[in-house]
Length: 165
Image 1 (cartoon, rainbow, N blue to C red):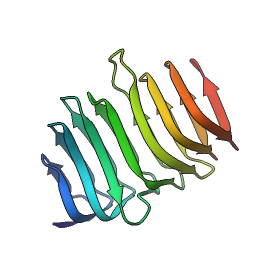
Image 2 (cartoon, rainbow, N blue to C red; image 1 turned 90 degrees about the vertical axis):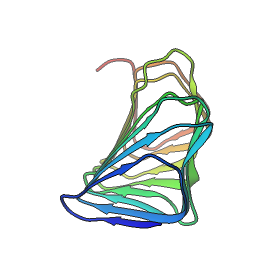
Image 3 (cartoon, one colour; image 1 turned 180 degrees about the vertical axis):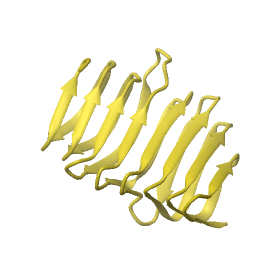
Image 4 (cartoon, one colour; image 1 turned 135 degrees about the vertical axis):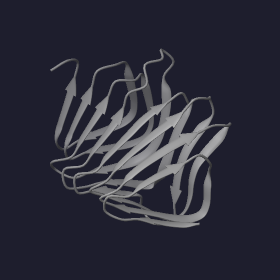
């Protein structure tokens, strides 16, 4: 299925999407997943001036696997509030313009986050969840870490803030 959500529309997803494309422009996307492996697999995953909330109530993996780099741009907000063991996004997550990604789950076990992340100046990531980052993190914007996080590799070209404030 190819989903093209335009301004003012709302899309609610309750299953994994395979061999698909997801493009949202000025839209609201809610992803309520379940099962050991859920998420997106296809050619394109693009959010522009959109909000995407991902909620998964079970363990396992949530993946965004796109042939072309997944892109979050404009004033988009991508929020993970997922009771999963792993978040896998690739090949490279492009965070552009003034877009925001939030990791807000409150459980104590760390989530493994596997992604190569390219942040443009003006973008923000807020981490309120214990995380283990297994891949290269390139910070061109601002990354606020309010929880226990470990990084395999961290290249900072912007602001990396730890703790409150």
